[in-house]
Length: 226
Image 1 (cartoon, one colour):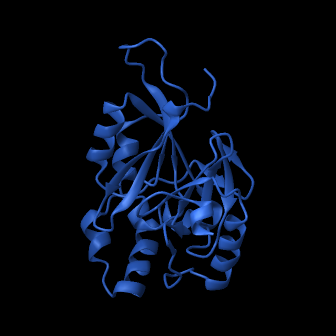
Image 2 (image 1 turned 90 degrees about the vertical axis):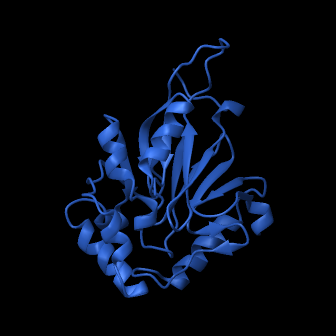
């Protein structure tokens, strides 16, 4: 089966966790043409931030199965459901930019606790939800392709923040770089205001009708945010 640009590939949002993170489900192929036949289609799960049971239930209800888990960056509120999701499904590719790779794998607990301690003075949120986080299977760099997406390296919110851009569908999953009427914070460890400004300038010269699906809040367009 090949990947098409059809209306049946529209993103599905699940708001999860205490920080109201958008977990996006994105079908990779069009729906089966025969009405009434439930065919499980591959999808990308983008930023499974918490509440794995809720994410899995939505995946099943939509007759999908994850081929990829794509992380726009490594912060805990964007990946806390990853262990349970990977335990439930087999042969899932876990992808993150190489500069945020430390948020996954054997050293992840120390990295996440340090981040929360630096900003909030407490790591209670991490400790309450912690499960051992698997290592990535794919490390991304600028210009890579994965599934239908081109990887845009957008440092600033974190060193390895990325956008996942589907040029055929003219849509972008922007993580915590660009929101509707807002931008990502840079006061977390690894944040860089100058880098974020450059990343935003890069995004805002894209076509104005590109739809933007952020890590928090409502969808928008490049034109609206420009």
